[in-house]
Amino acid sequence: MKTGLRVIAVVVVLAAVAYWAAAGANRGWTKTLIPVKVRDDITGIDGVTYQKKFVPGVDFLAIAVGTAIVATGVSFLFRTKSNLKHPTKE
Amino acid sequence: MKTQLLTLLAFTGLATSVFAAPETFDFKDPKGVNNAGFKLDAPLESINGSASGITGTVTFDPENAATVTGKIVVAANSLILPNPMQQGHMRGDKWLDVTKYPEISFEAKELKNVKTEGDVTTADAVGTFTCKGVSKDLTIPVKLTYLKDKLSQRVPNMKGDLLVVRSNFTIKRSDFNINPGQLEDKVSDEIGITLSIAGASAK
Image (cartoon, rainbow over all chains, first blue to last red; front, side):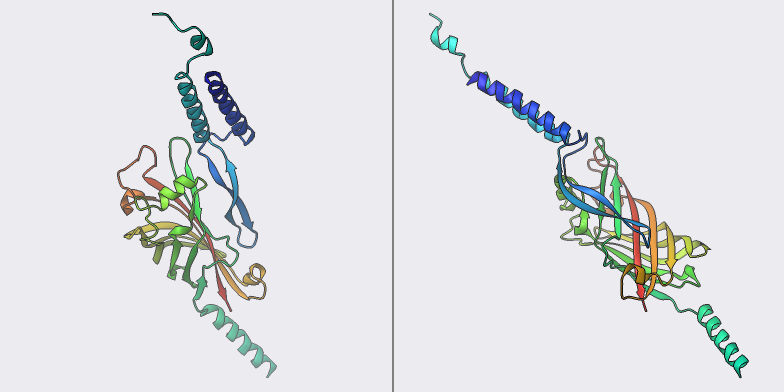
C-alpha cells in the first residue's frame, strides 16, 4: 500500500506534466474556451468567437502536484512489510 | 426644356447631398462580429475577454460628423473570459453583479476635436459611461468610418449604409464600484476597453 501510493503520486505528476506539455505548455491559467478571431472584410472589424477546448494551465499542474503530495504523505501512515514481519521487541 | 430639366436634376442632387438628413444606425449585428474587448493586468497573465451582446443606435450625419449622438449598450452577461472560474467571479456580486446590473453603456452627447478625411472621422466623444449602476462623464477617442451603400455587401437583400465605430480607452474599476480597493495586486484597477462595432442604416 505504501509503495502503491508513492507510485500513484509519481504517475499522477508525470501524466499531468506530459498532458500539460502536449496541450501547448500553457503558462497561464487553465482555459476551457479559446478565442478565435473572425474578420469581417466589409467593415474591417476583427470579431471574436470562442471555441470550446480544454487547455491546462499552471493551476492544473498545481492540483496534480498537490494530489501527489497528499498521496505521498498518506503513504507514510502505512508500515512497511518488513516492520510487520519483525516487530520490535520491548 | 432639356437644359432646364438637367439643371433641375443637378440642383436636386446638390440639395440632397448638401442637406442630407442624419442617419440612424442600428448596432445590433446580425453577423455577430461586433465586440467590445477588455483587458486587465494580472501577475501571471493579463485577463483578456470580450463581449458580443451589443445593441444601441447612433445618429450620424455624413455631412456634419460633429453632430453625432447615440447610445451603445453591452449586455453584462455576454462578457466572456476563457477561464470559467474567472468568468464566474467577474459576473458575480463582488465584481460586476450582472444579475442586478445587466447593462454597461456609453451615451455620446457630443463630439469634440472633430477631424474628417474622406469617409473617416476622428474625434473625442463626450458622454456618460455607466457600469454597475454608476454613471460618470467620460471623454473617449473615437474613429468613425462611414461606408456608403455597403450594407448590401454585408447583409444580402438589404440596401443602406454602414457606420464603423472604433475606440480604445481606459476606465478604473474603482470608479465604478467594481470591487474597489480589493485585490489590486492580483487584478489591476485599470481596465483597457477596445470597441469595434458596425451599425447599419437600412434604406
